[in-house]
Image (cartoon, rainbow, N blue to C red; front, side):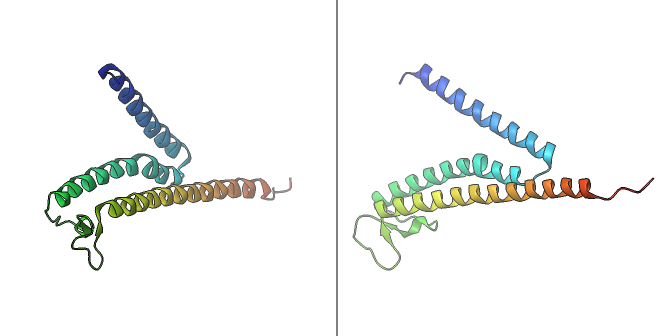
Amino acid sequence: MSNAAWVVALTLYFGFFIGMCVALFLCFRRSGNKGFLWLGIALVLWPIADAGLDVLREHYANIVLAGGRPWLFPYSLMVDGLHGWSGWQMPTGQFRCVHDYVKELIGQSLLLFSFIVLLKGFSKNKKDDTEEKMLPTEPS
């Protein structure tokens, strides 16, 4: 892919990303439903943190493959191949799989939680609207 195509792709990606941030903020401001904030965490902040965790994982995997020992947990659990594998330590490839599964579990859990909070907020607003309609009026 040429450099111009990368520029277009990244521009579109960040444009949609910023558009999603603005749309979620406006929906939160209009409705006051905290589910939109949680949706912003799940759809905006978590992918940024996810990318940072991928960079850390690859950095510490390179350290392990070069024969070093990472100091930061959980990356200190990685070992090169099956040599020195004991207790909670695991090979680099297995650690990468577990790392990816845990990240996906966290991301999907945030998304599910945000939808639950959104639905509770909508049902609460709908309940308030129906109660206002059902209030008895004073006889004239």
